[in-house]
Amino acid sequence: MKRFLPHIPPALYHHRFRLLWIGLIISVSGSRMQFTALLWHVSTLSSEPIALGLVGLARIIPVIAFSLIGGAVADVVNRRTILFITQSVQTLTAAVLGLLTLSGNVELWHLYALTALEAVTFSFDLPARQSLTPNLVPAKDLPNAFSLQSIAFTVASIAGPVLSGIVLATPNLGLAYAYLINAVSYLAIILALIAMGDIPQEHEAGTGGGINLSAIAEGVRFIISRPIILSSMMLDFVATFFSSATALLPLYTQHILHAGEVEYGWLSAGQAIGAAVAAGIISQIDDIRPQGPILLGSVVVYGLATVLFGMSSGFMLAMFALILVGAGDSVSTIIRNTIRQLLTPDYLRGRMTSVNQIFFMGGPQLGELEAGLAAQFFGIPFAIISGGIGCILGVGAIAKIWPSLGRYTGDEPLAAASAAD
Image (cartoon, rainbow, N blue to C red; front, top):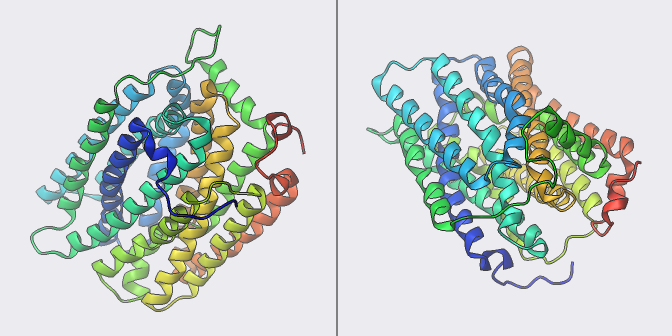
């Protein structure tokens, strides 16, 4: 760590990245508002924990089915065009959800089906968006760009849930308006994409840029051949599978804390508050070393904070624990994104991101299903505490299987990063 002085983050000097960054803050705020409202909505239609866990299942099945295709598309089709399409479809999905709720005829299956449709678009949106970032800033500013993107997501993940809690608790507003506000928020990304203009991207020479099984398999082989990338993905999956209890927050708020919508909104924002603080600090640090040990340590903090959250019976302690959870996750996310993007050629970034999407979406979404099942049979506190312990044990297992991850400093050349353990 060379210095820690307040300054304008270098990635924001690049006009097109700045447009995307501002658009993300607005759009993701709406998305987080909708997701927070949707979980509360499910809890009003069913008091069974498994009903909340099924939201995770509805989100992960489309990701598993379409992520690899989405990554291959992002390496061939113009990434800006992909984002136009995905953001437009998500706008319509949120609008339909809001109108259905206003009609008073919404049922659980509607929530699951529209959540699944949104997850399909996300399978194409994320590879395109993350792969687009290295096309907007030079390599030297990429870690800073990902740090700023993390800030955008975490700031939005604070504003969205807090606003959702207020909207849910406000007479004459409620669930439908949380969904409709989200529909409007997607316009921020669409307008940013229009203002950016054309964005060139590299294609693999000599392949014709095809979308086929061979292209998808190439992306999978690349990741398998890079222990640092593969182990970081496995670490993400294991940690979030065990420590994901976000879906249980509505029932936790109502039955453990005996609180209402506003408190639920703040708890839903707790992780994002911790993540924002951590990301803000990292954005002011020019160089993070050694990346491997810091990555492993941050996930251990994530697991320990989850245990503390599960043991909490008061609002303030629960909030503090969730802030720690978010801080650990933010540091982990920034380092993982930096490692993967810098060690991946541009023509493979979409496919790499699509495989990573299965890990980082699969972990928390399957984890929410697991947490719902555990809570159904053993209670909410047990589901959360046992998950935190499982996360810590998982870090130890990953460090033992891939010792190169713990030794990784961030200075190694590509050849070293691709060497076998």
